[in-house]
Length: 381
Image (cartoon, rainbow, N blue to C red; front, side):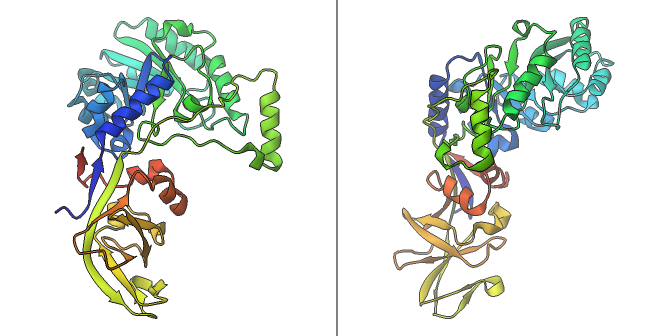
């Protein structure tokens, strides 16, 4: 028996993709974002993504790209700059390159490698990308005159959802301004939207690609109750919707039928009776208020659990039991009942408690999934 492992339901992942593409059918390129070990799900989901409609993949690093290239010939975009010394490897493995600065581009064109390129624009994120129209124009013109370089795509990242702010609109306007001298119809792939924008905003006419991230893995945005917004947020929202040049009326229907497919599983390794008044674990952080039975479970912060996870719950035999005491490196403890036995399977994360855990630990689903170390086995259903 493995102490701790992750179980992924590939059928659920496949259904998520099908449901997304059915609800949002008007894109040509559905780019599956598989950075961070496929959001912690492992590369064992790659063929499931492709078989259900994903036709491009996006990674963060060359190392991720090369690992996935062993599995598939589908196009792969590395969204972070690849070192100039590694461009030959990228070219040989058909990895698409991101151009995120003019200085990087000037070094790149000194090479003679045949490369497929996506131009990354900075429209306000202030992280990666080009924010000067002259640089954009110069890069575009130089690529056109270079026989080994092909500008396949242009993209940016959006800072906000655009629900309670005007920054979203400002970034779209900035993208239009930076590309004003480029006929976007001549660019194979224009991709701006991520999960939030896909679900919340109608499609932009000039975008034919969408990057699918956390939504593929079963988490979609929740609607905001606007009646609960107060003060400045309400003022911003009202102004936002009434602007004459408003770019995108927010969708009223953005419920997407997707479900998490991720389980973090361990087992009970010991049971102990604890008397009223006794303490559990390091630091005496929990004192029993009555006589209780405690299960010790083989999982801890070395397995990706947040230290704030104490007083959350695990699931054993379809019943929830509260974690008490501190989160240890390789063990946690939970109050259980007489129905629990040593070696019983414990679900620490399951499809039903993802949002509950995130709310309790003050983290995002992205963080929850990706902090489970990649050396923990992923087992696929």
